[in-house]
Image 1: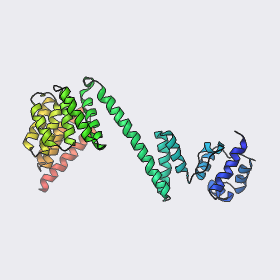
Image 2: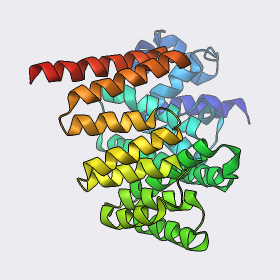
Image 3: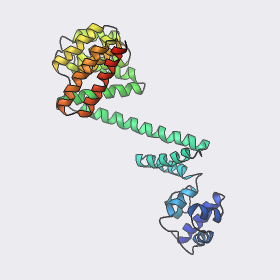
Image 4: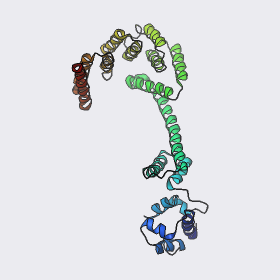
Amino acid sequence: MTDHVFFDNLKKYRLAKHMTQERVAEQLGVNAQTVSRWECGTTLPDVLILPELARLYGVTVDDFYKKTSFGYENYAQRLCSVYENSHDPVDFMRCREEFLKLIKDNKMTIADKWQYGWIHMSMMNFCRDVALEWYQKAVDDPPQEDPNEYAIACMQRIWMYFLLKRGDEIVAECKEKVKNAPDDSIQTDNLLIALIYAERPEEAYEIFLSAKDRFRDNWHLFIHGGDICKKLGRFDEAISCYETAGEIGTYFCDDLDCLAQLYKETGENEKASACYLKMAAIYNARGYDVEADMMKRLAKEASEQVQAE
């Protein structure tokens, strides 16, 4: 690449922006003679000033050395084209940062606005595909490796499908897995989760009733059974389910958290406060001081609600 391409581009980009050498000099904190010498090829811009010059002309530094290139309306739009070509999250963040500067300065054109929307839509699709890929990798692992984390992975994957408006698909998948493995409590629990998200508590309740005696050691199933009963207004049954989960042994005070939420929703704030205090004691014993303090605050709020009543 010969040097004249670089110098010619400096002038081409400036004229495309309808800027005088004086205006460019003012923006960059140099004098007009310096800009003139750059364009004539007498001197080169300092390497530290090149990024600012590129941003001013709506190009990248690399564009200065290309025979066929043109200046964009602004630097954000140029970075948008970079991201469109690479689909690299790093380029997305660089592009987003430049658009945020325009937003802060209230300089967004119609083109800027739709391109800002587009990069987020594209990134959303990228993140969707990555999320689905890694949720699938997680549930493809043997559940015995870490049962609690496996259960979380399954639940998150099911939730993702509902966020994507693919709820019928995941419900059908869960039903098929239960059909193929009727003695697998994990698959039955996943079906309950899918039906809860699908707002089909009556159907979920019938499945839970037929499963609870067969899977007495799966505390996840009783937590979700309690959630189903709560949705149906069967509060005593919900409490019993949560207590059974606690007797089996939950992962992170799930039973007490569910009980506290139920008591709050039914106006039994004194019982809710007691649940929060129990959780605070457990968290303190485990060394989770931040979580313990949060539970103490919730217990205090519930107690204050009792006094207010």
